[in-house]
Image (cartoon, rainbow, N blue to C red; front, side, top):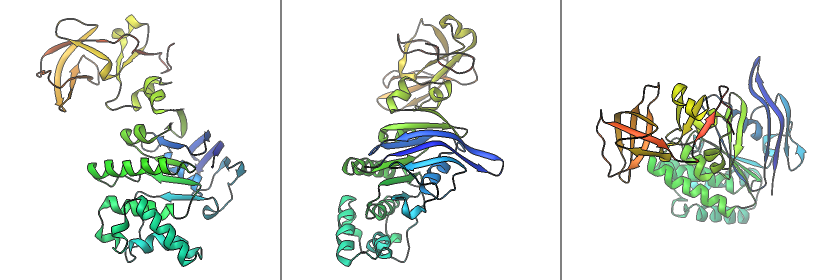
Length: 334
């Protein structure tokens, strides 16, 4: 099993510091997900771990050894890219076998490893096909299979599902989750901008902002106990409702945060009120968007059978124990 340790890791391009003093322990066998807004440095951090980007400052340790200057091929790491990067003229079998052939593996070893990976990823019927004859989800599984046969210590995934449609994204996400269950000794690090992927796949999530770590924790830690206004507003979909100014003063806070499912909605009384501007009906649930005089509307999650029209006045109150209070600097008030 393989653990990684990032100590004061930094990355600069000229005078621009993209990663700023990153300190992070990634445990053996863990599924760690990096999330954050575009440009926060999550893909750059992944590439530094892979050895595809030079580390400017600090150290990267794998199994207790500093590997800053170790070639990517010598780090025991396999990377799965967003673009699949398959050889179009090679069959699925040959794509998956390529790295083993370069390493002078025997025909028997290649056959055994490719066959096992294909079975694990449900690719056995497609081994003789070319990548162009596969769906996007199947091609991504081939890319994953190509990494599996190398028996890596660490898997790196760089937004591997972003090119897939919604249905294929769900199916492939399940495959990756199953892969993690089967490969208990392999550490996995995954970059995504998708909230659902992060929340459903991760053992822990690392939230990055402007090249720095904002918070690290389990998905429920980040969802229920955000350590900053940024994390509270970034984690979760829809985003946490933020209520400011005089409407937050009764709670002795600069900003009050309440998630949409933690609001009690009433037709005649409540802590706050506003006018309905839009409703999204999702079947079992509906999201009601309410204008209460702030820049962003408040989002209320209600039963799908509850119907509101634009212009209706609604009242709502936070559930007890479900209020997040923040001061003027964005730090939580305990």
